[in-house]
Image (cartoon, rainbow, N blue to C red; front, side, top):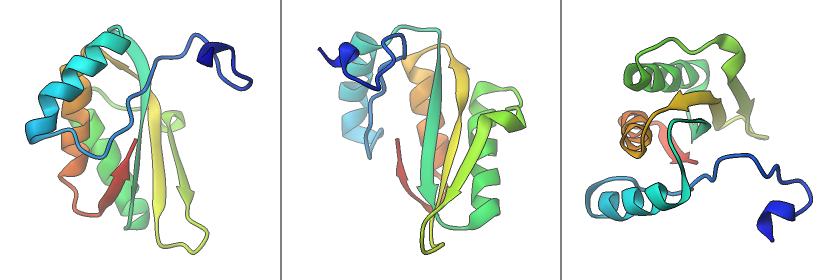
Length: 119
């Protein structure tokens, strides 16, 4: 079983990883998310993009704009790629109340053209 696999914490929230959460896939994503996750819950958001510290700040602002509260500094971690071209921003754990709120966070993050991937 996945929950018993070495390295997995059985009490964590299932995370749906995807490259799109918009348009024609939005309905399918919401249906699947509602089947595997329960809300409210704590979860993290990860974005990978270019732009260094400015990109990190933009991702934090995007999440804050949806959850309507400030994210503590200790909930934001960043990692620079080996060649320094990309930065990975991990924000969380953050309390979210619905699938729609998760989707709204992803959509807010996607508005930044520097974002290449999100998890």
